[in-house]
Structures are given as structure tokens and as C-alpha cells.
Amino acid sequence: MITNLETLKNKLLKSKLKPTYQRLKILDFMADNKSHPSIDLIYKKLKGQIPTISKTTLYNTLEMFAKSGLVGKLTIGQEVRFDGIANWHHHFVCENCGAIIDINVTCPNCQKKEIEGHLIKQVHGCFRGLCKKCR
Image 1 (cartoon, helix red, strand yellow):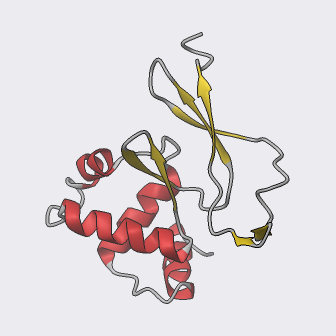
Image 2: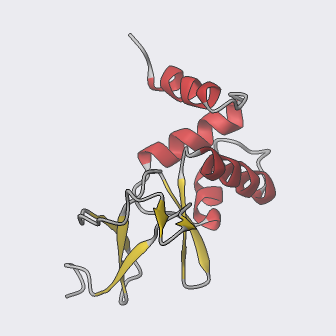
Image 3: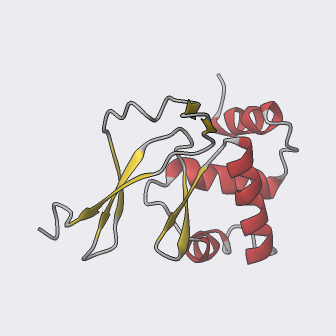
């Protein structure tokens, strides 16, 4: 039986990243988190489990994970958020409570690698309005 830890370790190794304790804990947190957390929130949640972690290490690790395709990175306004789902998808941002919600929208441009000669590296679709709870 393959455990979650083994699965995460294999993901890191497949991405040619050393599976350190900190990286495994950060990746585990992101895999279980669907709220698109900020660095500050991730830091608060992991500080108890990894007392030696710094925000700089956390940010650098998440940047490395984003470049390796292990997590998604999105900017909402001026704030950078990280997403446990790395594949391209759209988001809904509630203007009242600030929730960021994954939405399933069929978008013909998400699968394109090039448009009019331009190389596409990322696609960010963001809808804004009021979520179900705030509505």
C-alpha cells in the first residue's frame, strides 16, 4: 500500500527535487488545502509542525513547486496565492468575503500552447462577484 507520504515523495523525485521534510510537509499542506492560501496563512499553519521554517524558505519552496508544476500560483489584486491544483483552471473571487473558489468552466484557450504566434505559459481566468454564501 502506497501512503500519502510516499506519493508526495515520488512527486518531488519525479520533478527532480530532493524530498526533504520541509518540502514534504509543504506539499502535503497544499495537497489538502483548497482555499488558495497566502504565504502568511501557510506560514501560520505550518509553523507549529516545522518550528525552524521561515517565510523566505516557504516562499522559495512554493516558487520552486510552482515552476515544477506541483502547485499553482495566482495573483489576486496585489496578493500572491498558491493553489494545490497545478493544472490550468479558472477561479471565482468573492468581492465581499474574499473567498477564492475553483470553478469548472470549459475554456477553449486553456489547452492552447500558442495563440497568434504568442507562446502561452500560463492561463489565468478569474471571475468576480458574490459567492453563494454572501449573495
